[in-house]
Length: 108
Image 1 (cartoon, rainbow, N blue to C red):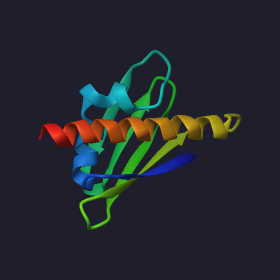
Image 2: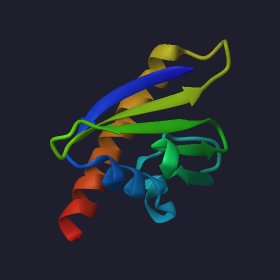
Image 3: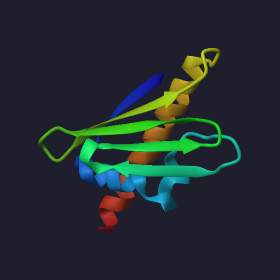
């Protein structure tokens, strides 16, 4: 399992709802296989399960009590995977999610 974390400038429920929006999945999930993306919101657990044709994992989001939150993106990978490369992709995915959250938050 490879993980990456990032602070978000929105409450946890906004981050979770944005992350679980199927129309936004392709914009933020790590690149994988042929581009099929699946997300499953587990709101009561504060997480979103996700998978692409290439990878799978989950996103856990916790609020910090000030209107912001922290997101932890985790990916299940093979033992022979280059973890530095995977972490780099996860970092980019969290950056893209932060952009989607900002867009979603500003539209609402």
